[in-house]
Length: 494
Image (tube, rainbow, N blue to C red):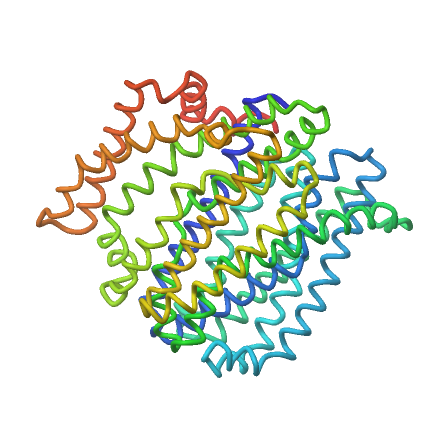
């Protein structure tokens, strides 16, 4: 797998995931205008519950595909994939039953009794959403990134259509949830049919217990850490649901939304590079592994750092344009969460996972969860409504520093060698300088969309020109941009 093919695969998946994130953002923009704050808050709570359960219940099994599949021959790959899919479906059944049985408790904990009434619908989501996490790792690990990107984009558009249609036709919130359930059922049927066709149908030897044992041994600590990491990153929203009614949760959640692309970029790149990280580690090629990791961080910083500066400046205009002035209170929450971006330039745990050191990932997640719960309670008492957001930002940055320290010790590096700090700082300085240049534009007496459009064009132009002049963009960056401007990777075979 060469460098340029890795870049192309990463960009393909980033584009498709950005379409998904953008679609959900558009869905939110429409729903805030068609639903009351209380109903919209209920919708967001259902999505929060289901996405959280579906991610933590898998115990790291989907991520184990990246680690194991490159190590197996074709026969073992088929057995491994079939037993993984069956395991995920079994987990989906169990999670769906438990979600339904705990419906009253969920409604009470989320300060929303209506959740108990619709639990029979959204419990069914888990039955189909949990196995769905199998498809992308399988395709990427089998060198089918373009297909993964295409499938993801198509189903993302489909979700928006299924979610919006009942509301547009005035059928109400229960019809919206039923429509989404039907969408997930269709997606699940596609997953089953495609997988069976690709792997040549069902096999008698669907389970290899030696492989299953190794998978569980690898996945369990990773799954526990993923569960704790997921709870930690969302504990603020659960706390807000516990302390405030659904309409207040809607205000908080709209501020806590993650920008398309920037929340996707580091994790997608890490997943693409994961098989290569594993390969380099097994070859004991530490120098190349670190070089590849640092290069991925530099490329990510080229996008995330300027986006951070730009969105921080225009946040008030952006939030009220997207979600109306009724959600102006979301701006301070949004700005607080933006403070996560400067250090979220990579999936730090990927390096440790590539070495099979999932116990350190587990330890980091445990510390993150404990710190975030404690800080959420303390900061809520001190700062009120915004307190949980501040707590999450502080806890997550402390978690990142823990990872940096662990990687530093593992590879016997000084702190200043763990990350490409000089390159990150140079990109950050350019971004801030350009931000200062365009800052006065937000005070213009023109429409919000005009201010945002003008600011975006000028920021992008100045950033690119200054970065190019200072040689922040490498020749490989320029060549990659030129190649994608011609859409060459989309015409090539993947």
